[in-house]
Image (tube, rainbow, N blue to C red; front, side, top):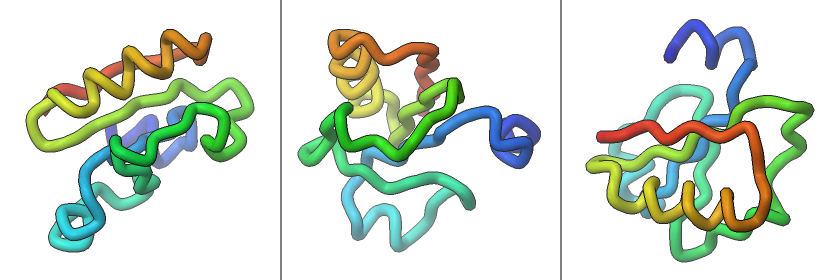
Length: 80
């Protein structure tokens, strides 16, 4: 994961809450909490794979479903 993030090949979206993000997060991840997730306001992707993640995979799974329903591809889901 680090290699593709460093190479800017993915858009890593942390869907946890701001307090969770402040405590710890993956460098390079963008914060967009699940409760505020709107596919249309994602940063410019330029063909990058969208990868939502959270602590357990539950919230990121829901966000992945929302993104797929909105037609966003390519998409991957980072569990746990």
